[in-house]
Length: 297
Ligand SMILES: NC(=O)c1ccc[n+]([C@@H]2O[C@H](COP(=O)([O-])OP(=O)(O)OC[C@H]3O[C@@H](n4cnc5c(N)ncnc54)[C@H](OP(=O)(O)O)[C@@H]3O)[C@@H](O)[C@H]2O)c1
Image 1 (cartoon, rainbow, N blue to C red):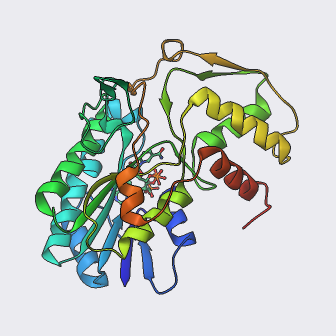
Image 2: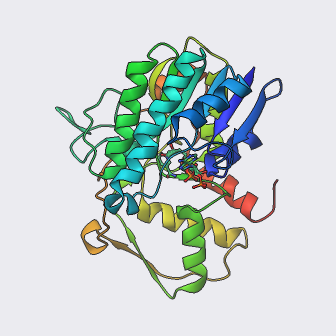
């Protein structure tokens, strides 16, 4: 099977290459190879490489910047995805695409029985330009390539690569006297390696289509996540001293983009589709911190 991965320099593309299963021939394309906002560029690349599967890990991911940069976010996350979907349709290629919990809003998880993890069919209500543009990308795929595509929504992705919450926290914990971290946004961290393994598991299963949710298992606030990062990083020698971490509210830390207060994703369909069980976020965090500490490679 030949697989083309878009988004070469991103954290998910790195994780995909690191977890590449035997028997799959994959190549990554970066911006030097393709600009997904340009339909010719996308079409030429897919025609030339002739993959059987495209994994789109490219996206405009600067959530706060997108509020003032709407056109750029839409050009990549909506129009760019349309270019990819159309080229896949033309060349009969299966598309695996990654979306986000930010397609949901603060009310999306409220059910008759209280708050519950979000299902793929839960009410969509993006609260930000990024979320709207990612939702538009999902809708394009559903229209253009309904029977030959998979959309996987994920959340709070981190890895040893690129910029992410774990690496930002480690840096702040090593340089600041104390930290305030938000306690009233609830979700689930996701190790990019686990998401990559899920994508590889379904890449080989053409009967898997539609929208699924994949994160690590469990539930956390950003505050809980930060406390765990500090605790485990101290154990592994990545940090030398403890600093106080205070729980703060979203209102105390205003950002340009609004974010859902609860976006725990229900992974049932994704686990069944791939035959994989998500592992708890804390053990996944420990694994990535071991990597950063140089204990594994
Ligand atoms: N990170 C998270 O917490 C999170 C949460 C939920 C969902 N997701 C989704 O997961 C996927 C992977 O995220 P990630 O964290 O790996 O993202 P990332 O590290 O920001 O990587 C995104 C990649 O997209 C590339 N890209 C942007 N515009 C492009 C264009 N016009 N043409 C070609 N490539 C372009 C970027 O290239 P440059 O480096 O050259 O800009 C970068 O390599 C994305 O779909 C994202 O929306 C991420």
